Image (cartoon, rainbow, N blue to C red; front, side, top):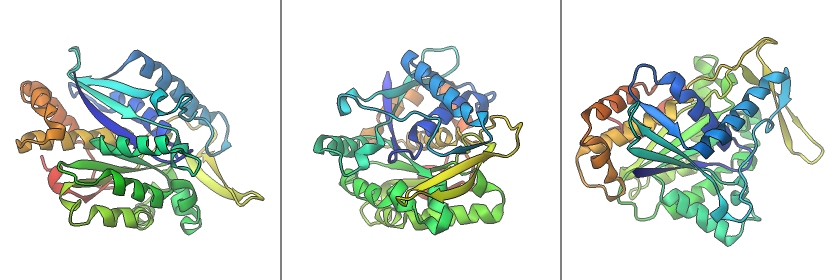
Length: 328
């Protein structure tokens, strides 16, 4: 089976595992009549089911402090002990022909205490991934004019990571900015515009890197806001005696139910990207598997195209760069 590697990128507590849980849970709900199926391996299914229960538990109280409810990723014996979440992707009722491997890692690998092996592992992970999803803690980006963005989302460090990982590229890469915990900032057109503007400001140096002469031809950048719970919004920010921010989230009403939105959008964009590369009909060493995956089965190609065309381009969703790699 062919394999595609995807990295979930972000520091401790930002919400990488939350994002992956929401993507997994919402795919089946949003795939509609499309003849596609995403099948987790047994271990991934069990772990993500547990994480989904934790995510839904945020609705057990009216107001909760952030960074609660989802257990982070651990590596007890170093990078070699990290778990990957793997899914088979193919037509319903048929053995999957492509494996998507979502790579998660401890956010502490971004911190000063990370050792050389952990830092090297992270650089190689980004270098070898066709798609990177940058999970963004949206309240940290937006509240108090982004005062805690650097502290929590660490955009400068992420930019430096890409500087090392994206040297001498010879094939396209997709980088998805995925704001989560963003329900408050998508309430109307004005707040949505402010969110997009703040993402471009908060990651300005990274976007400049992607726009450089060497990287510009190869990079696809999109923004896909993910409402992982839907009915829980940011409510207030407090600062403790050590100047650490504490973000609080509140249900929109006491009887609010779990109602995520747009969690499948990163997968729609990913498949749109892969389909375009296949239709481009050129030799990309990094993506040669596409010929055997889509080239033989016209029905699978049709199903992928149908699902990919559901990718949103308004309401906070935007292609920042690389439209030509998404034109199907």
